[in-house]
Structure formats: C-alpha cells, structure tokens
Length: 167
Image (cartoon, rainbow, N blue to C red):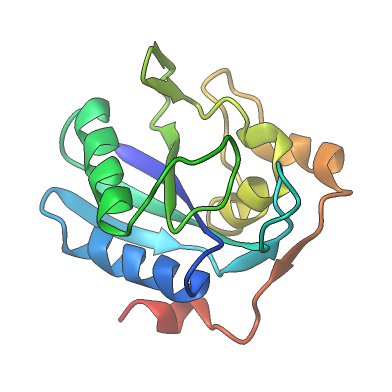
C-alpha cells in the first residue's frame, strides 16, 4: 500500500531529527521511501511556549497492515526519545499516518485520513509538494483546503535541498 507520513519535530536539532527519521524509514524492511518533501518551519499549533516546528511529508510503499505501519512509526518515535507530556506539546519526533491508499480507517488507535490534516498548512504544503493531485478517499482534492489555512505561516527551509537529504 502507498502511505503518506507526516514528520515533525521541535526539540534537539529538529531538522536533523527529521533527516534521521527519513534515513531510518529507508532502512526498514517492507518499507520503500518513494519521495519526500523539503523541510518546512512552522509555529506550533497548541501551546505557544515551545519552539517552532520543522515538518516534512514522506511517501512510502509499505508491505504490511496499517496497524503494523502504526506500530513501526511509534517504535521510531520512542527510539528518538518521544515523550507525550502535554497535548500538542513539544516533541523530539512525531510521525503521523496521513493517507493510506484510498482507505478510510476509524479504529480506536488509528484514524486515516489523519483527522486534522486538512486544517494544517504544515501538512498540506509538504504533502502537495510531492503529490500535487492528492485526494481524500471521498475524492476531495487536498489542494482545495489550502485557502482555509492560508493564514498559517509555513516556510520552506530552502537551504536544505530535498534531493540531498536522502542519498
């Protein structure tokens, strides 16, 4: 199955954490990293007493079930020192499943498409960078939500060439 994964960090060298996470995804059996966006900087959505975030989106080809992917991503978060101290709080690494093929999943521990992706510019901009025609399972173009998030400042980190991040 094809998956789009949102990556985010705002602690302990967040850009390097995302690059390391992309490398880790690339090395996992059963996962092929097909492409990824540039890195983007954005203000936190939640408590404002935390550093800005660095975000990206990766497109993966995954062999396995959605829950196997979820558990793999959670293991990578834990390995990066992820702690859930407060809602929408600071993070060393956050990996979210955004889309899985054309699936709609509503399980207690997994919701696909990601329930808040359409109201977050830091998800939409990098996702649309690598998949400009991306659609929700109901056929709605994700690009149609850009106007609704236009006030959210998301800045590409242009000094980091996305093709140089993964060799």
